[in-house]
Image (spheres, rainbow, N blue to C red):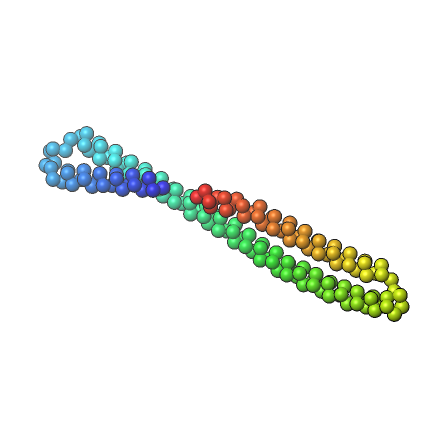
Length: 158
């Protein structure tokens, strides 16, 4: 991009010098070759200006699309965060319920010789809930990383 801008500036400067030179000379001293060269430079300048405009439009379009995509990913991340908080609260409630159950069963064991199998079953359910929660978090993070990686790599290359 900067090369095009630099070339455009050089061409504009050359055209200005040519125009000043033409203004200083008598109209009869201007040759057809000089007029053709001037017209050629003007045409080249117009072409370069158009190329710069097209590149700027393309860049703005790409940046806009990337912003939309990032905003969508941010919304997804926010929704996942809310779901994660709900899952976390559920796991906390499950642990608390299991703690109360264990205490009740331990007391029952001490007084009535209750069933220790129920305590183990409760612990297994809690462990499975924690594993499932961890697995869900890991899958969500992998999905987000997969979505963000092309954006980050594209930004790094730009």
